[in-house]
Image (tube, rainbow, N blue to C red):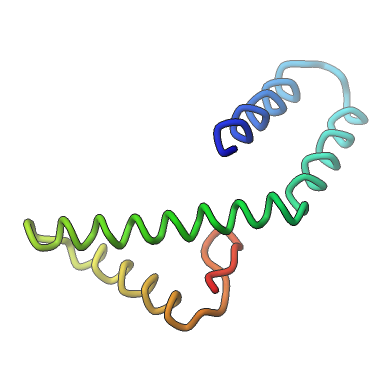
Length: 99
């Protein structure tokens, strides 16, 4: 699903940048993209992907932190993400919920 969405986003962007269809066609495509982005199924998929990414980042951090020195800036970022997840409310940097 992620690859398909990325592909279609690339096609749409290429079309907008590569054609001279005018402002009307651009606005029509922008409206369609907004409708897709507001679709509950798309939003749920984006939230699931964001949560899965946070989980993988946490696992990777723990795997690496025991074997090498992790810079304080990265350790602080991991801690802040972990705190957000334990609170179960709010949004992450991409506007998806963390709960």
